[in-house]
Length: 324
Ligand code: ACO
Image (cartoon, rainbow, N blue to C red):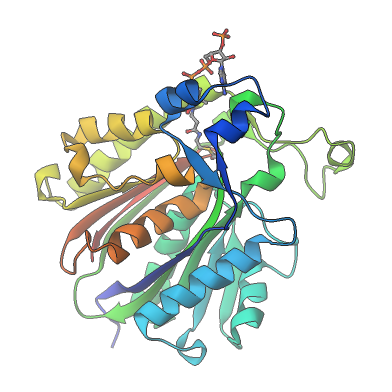
C-alpha cells in the first residue's frame, strides 16, 4: 500500500570552520559593517578551506541527518543533491555522495535550481515516496558559492557563504509534507547568473573573469513579490491561515526580503527562523540549514506546522508546508 505522506525523520548541517566577518570584508573591498548589516542583515559567513569541497560539506550534513533519523546507508533508497556548485560535472553529486556514504544501487541524482534547489528536491522526493517508488530519501542542499564569487566586487561578495543542509524523508502514515509548490520563469535569466558552462565555454573563467553576476535591486523586487505570492498560494492550497503556522523557514538571502514575507503573512519575526546573520546567503543550503538549526536548538517541535520558502536564479521559487 502506498504511504499517505513523506515525513522528515532527521535533519543535519555542515558549515566550514573558517568564518569571514564583515570586518574582514572591510579590508578586502570598499564596504562597511554598517552598510552590510543595514542592507542585508549579514554579519558573518562561513567559507570553505582551500582543500575542502562541496562534497565534503554534503557528506557531513548527510551523516548528521542520517544519525538524527537513526537510519543507515542500507536504508536509503533515493539520493538527491541540490546544488549549483558541484565538485565535478559528472558523476553527479548524488552518485559522489552515494560513494562517500556507502549507499548502493538506488536512484541518485543532483539538480540545479539555484537557491530553490532544496525545495525542488523536497518536492521530488515527496512524490517518489508517496508514489511508492522510494521509502527513505536523503535530500541535501550543498553549496560553495565562494568558489564563484568575485572577491573584488563589493556588490556581491558581501552576500554569499558556504554550507550544506540535509534531511532524511521517510514514508509515513502520519502527516508530514502537506504540500509543495514550485515555480520558475526564465524570462528573468539575465538578472542573476553565472555566465560559463561546459557547452558555452569556460575561457573567461581561466582568465578569472567569470563570477556571479546580479542586478541586486531588481532581484530584490521580484523576490519580494514572488515570495509574497507563493506563501499565499501555499496557505490557500491547504485552506489555512498564517496564524496557524508555528514557524516560517525562509531562504536566507536578505533580512529585508525575509521581513517583507513575514509582513505579508502578518507573522511576528519571533516565529521566523533566521540564520542570515551568521550564514549569509548559502543558496540551496540555506533552508535545510535553518531547519536544522531550529530543530537542534529545540525551537521546532514534533507536530508543529512549518512553512518553507525559497527564491533564486532562473528565477525559480517554491514553498512547502510541513507538519514536522
Ligand atoms: N558596501 C557599500 N556600498 C555598496 C555595497 C557594499 N558592499 N554594495 C553596493 N553598494 C552601493 C552601490 O554601489 C550603490 O551606490 P550608489 O548609490 O552610489 O550607486 C548603493 O550601495 C546602493 O546599491 P543597491 O544595489 O541599490 O543596494 P540595495 O539596497 O539594493 O542592496 C543588495 C543591494 C543587498 C544586493 C540587495 O539588492 C539584495 O539583497 N538583492 C537580492 C539578492 C537576492 O536575494 N538574491 C537572491 C537569490 S541569490 C541566488 O540565487 C544565488
